[in-house]
Image 1 (tube, rainbow, N blue to C red):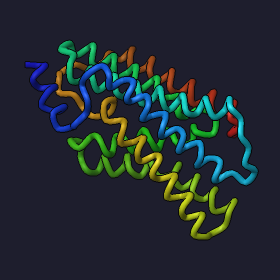
Image 2 (cartoon, rainbow, N blue to C red; image 1 turned 45 degrees about the vertical axis):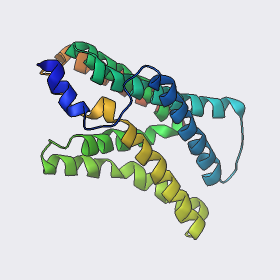
Image 3 (cartoon, rainbow, N blue to C red; image 1 turned 90 degrees about the vertical axis):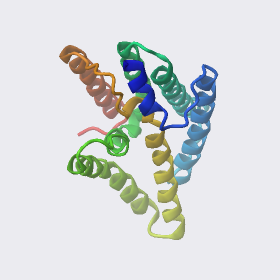
Image 4 (cartoon, helix red, strand yellow; image 1 turned 120 degrees about the vertical axis):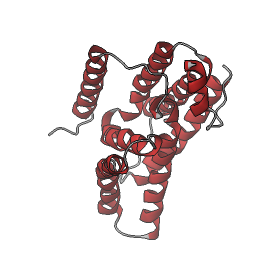
Amino acid sequence: MRAERVKVIDDRHDWPSTWWSIPLGALAGCALGVVARVWMRWISTEPEFSWGGTIGIVASFGVFGAAQSAAAIARRRCVRPSAVAWARAAAALLSLGLFGAAGAVMLPTVLFGSLAVWRPSAPRAIRAIFAVLALPGVAFVSVGIVDDHGWSVVSIGRIVAFLAIYAAVVAATWPTTAPVLDGWRPSRRLVVAVGLVIAAFVGAALWFGGIQT
């Protein structure tokens, strides 16, 4: 019964369920990473290039794509609810590489934006709150672009590209964010542990990224 209930939800999404979709997801993630790297150079007031930084960014997006694909496979093919839950948790943690250094400011946007999009069964008021909580990061980056480059058609293009990149990231988080009707719930210890790991990661990213308060 549990496997059938999981399949009912997953059939709504045309996501590959074979193992070769993991490298395919990695390639798609890398492609998005290349776009993101080009965008970063486009918005910079002092464009610089380094192979280390570029490889790190593209690799982070590649890991994100592979992890989400693996979680999608687990949702479709695993029968044990706990195995699906662990796959989703692992995918979420592996996706944190997207939010290193200055990218940490976008973690709340992706987190709350994903909940607003992929939790359709939640009350509308709750989804609206999630959507509002996703906006500060978007506003922060958009205002920064305008401050650096002024209002122009090019600046609007930079903002539109930024929105498109993170819309793609939010869209790709379905495997980890959308609910699974299997009746399984994580223990309180696991929730606390995952929360502490995320908080520690964000704190380190903010510190080493120079966004210190």
